Length: 331
Image 1 (spheres, rainbow, N blue to C red):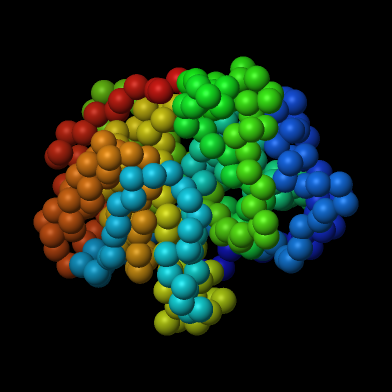
Image 2 (cartoon, rainbow, N blue to C red):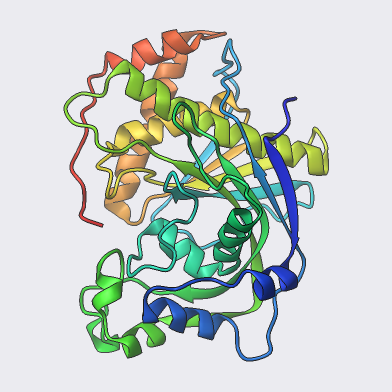
């Protein structure tokens, strides 16, 4: 088992005091004030690890992977009450960890940080210590895992004219919405729940058909994040622990990723990394159809690759399907 590039721990109360978030937009500050009433503190210890990219070859893709598709966005509901399990949620990261948390933007990454304000403190603390807060460098993915973070608020982003958000609050709409509508959309979580995060950055800027290099990069990034989470899960709870990952259409919003392909490559990475259960949050029924199609593609590729399978073989089989990049959703 290879260890992380670094492993650091932060006392949550000290982290909030010494490295508070830095907001550039009043709406983000308002969310923080709802999350933390005067005198309130976070509790516990937050664990942060950063990992080098690696793909363990040959890949074993035949391992059974329990997969479910949910027609919603992250609810952070525990799907396994077993004490011998850890659940992880993917953060659709920027190469710079939580980079835009203080901005007017409210896409998946920024929304997750707003609901878990200590993630912003983690970024500030890493930078203050001179530790890299990059989820990828000039050559490879470097996933960052953050464990034991409180989720203190829930923000409704769906359109609701009666609540003052006729077009919703997702993406660029958040920053231009009336402040009172943002406040009404926000609910405190008492007591806070606990979340574990896998921050991985999807590729951006592609066009036309996905190249073999694109496919290799996407698979390797997902594999690195999932394998790191598996290693941490087993380190904490032992080799028989169950590891569950929640994810969705990673890289399919502003970056224009192909939904079927991005789900398929995540499912293949989960198989290769020996994830026990993959929960795909698809947003709605139409998204559920896309996610289910991606899972079917992963099953087909795993069958065609044989056992064991080289990374080159996997990439070649996927490339033959001719998937093409989509367009940005503007968020």
